[in-house]
Structure formats: C-alpha cells, structure tokens
Image (tube, rainbow, N blue to C red; front, side, top):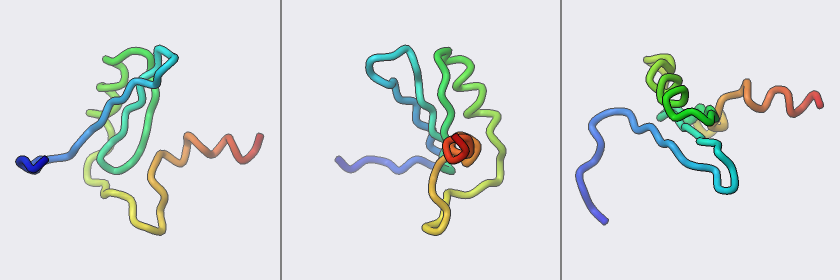
Length: 72
C-alpha cells in the first residue's frame, strides 16, 4: 500500500492481547507500558525532543526497561 509519508515523528500504541496493557513506542524506539491510554499518550508526547532513532549499534527500546532484567 503506497500512501503519503508522515511528515513528523511516528508514535505507535499497541494493545498486548490477553491483558489490559498498552505498549507505546516512540519514534526513537523507546517503549513504555501502561493500562491507562491517557498516561501512555502523556508519556509519548512528553518524551524528550531532539533525540534520534537508534543506530545499528544501539538496540531499540528504553534501557531502563531492561536494566533490571540482567540483575535478577
């Protein structure tokens, strides 16, 4: 499907099936989950400006979301 390209940042909000949780993804790749759509959009729209999409050496996503996983 060909259509017009977005002229600004693209934000994505997805529902995680089997839960009441929404996953928001910023154009830079940072992610945030919330059950309240207003909370999620507030986070997306307040996310720092001036950042760039991740490079190949930098995996997408918010490092603070996975930092605790390595420690237990």
